[in-house]
Structure formats: C-alpha cells, structure tokens
Image 1: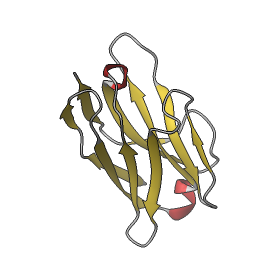
Image 2: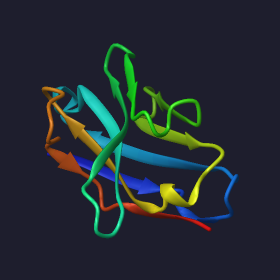
Image 3: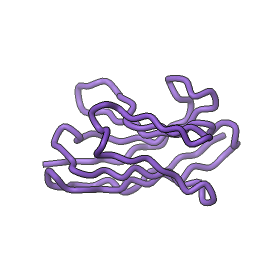
Image 4: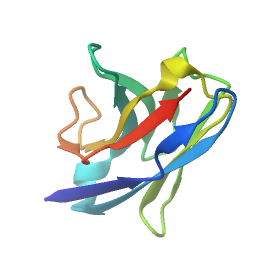
Length: 117
C-alpha cells in the first residue's frame, strides 16, 4: 500500500511562485515513478512533471522552464517548484506514484488546490 499526502497549494497572483510538497510512503517498488498531475474544472487530467527513480524527468510543454520537479530521497518527499504562474495553471494538483511508470498511475494523493489570479 502506498500513501501520498500533498501540501503547499494556495492562491497566488499571476507571475508568483508556489512550492508543492508530497510525502510518499509505502512499498518502494510501487514508487519507481512519482509525479505531479493536475486537473482543472471541465478539463482532463494532465501530467505536469514526472521523475523516474534514476532521476530522469519529464515535463508538460506548458510548464517547461517554469516548473521544476525534485525529490528528497532520504525523506521520501517530492517537490514541485512553480514559478511565473499563469491563470491557466489554476487546477487541483495531485501527487501520484506507479511501479511501472505507465499511465494511469496506480496511487494518488488527495490533491492540493492551486489558484492563480
């Protein structure tokens, strides 16, 4: 069983920054890949940033050069540093983990809301 708990969401003005955190626990092999996804009202969920166990990262085109995914492996914490936020970044952000690094990921947090005005 894998547990993921996000924090760090909030409201920010356009151009501002936020850092999301996700504490993830559970069977290590079930967390070979961890990442951030988001879903805005009326839109499909999209992958924002993902990181593989070896350190490879992948970003959505819309957030490249603005968002950075990183992790503290010793503490099992996943981060998403979000800079130069746009109103289009407004969404519920979810942390997720998967063993085989294939969509859809198997394990999900409860989400944290990010609102950009």
